[in-house]
Amino acid sequence: MTGNDFVKFFLRTPLYVFMGDTMLITITGCKTGKQYTTPVGFYRENGSLWVLTSRERTWWRNVRQGAEVSLLLRGKSVRAFAQAELDERAVEQHLRDYVRHISMAAKSLGIQMENGMPDDHDIRRLARERLFVQVRLI
Image 1 (cartoon, rainbow, N blue to C red):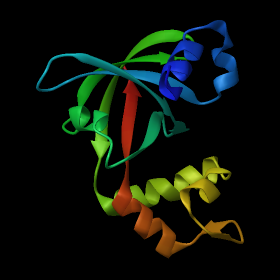
Image 2 (cartoon, helix red, strand yellow):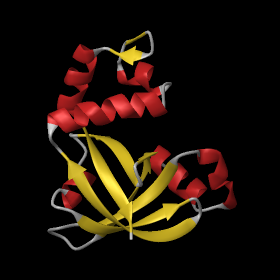
Image 3 (tube, helix red, strand yellow):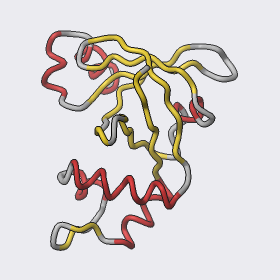
Image 4 (cartoon, rainbow, N blue to C red):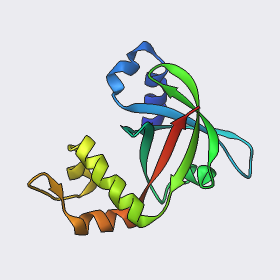
């Protein structure tokens, strides 16, 4: 059992409450038509859920142009619309929002903080490696 398998199992039980802002997202492959489910962390901003992921991952490519997805959010199945945000400047701003919401994440992402503000160089570097997926509930 992989780490993701364990998280998927855990999120499907009443113990999901201990997983914080983690949900399951199920997407349909553009080429294969197969469904893929992966656990993702998120933060809420302006009525959307924002998911940070690596550009090296592949699941987000299925929502590049926007697509309907299924979520297991706080123990409930919900439908949503997801779209990848690839523009590096927009990703930079979302990274600033992300570390404002989840300040503990800055260290693990390699973002230096000074006086509560993230280092601009670190933000620019990370925006080339990461992206956000915006998820809006339907």
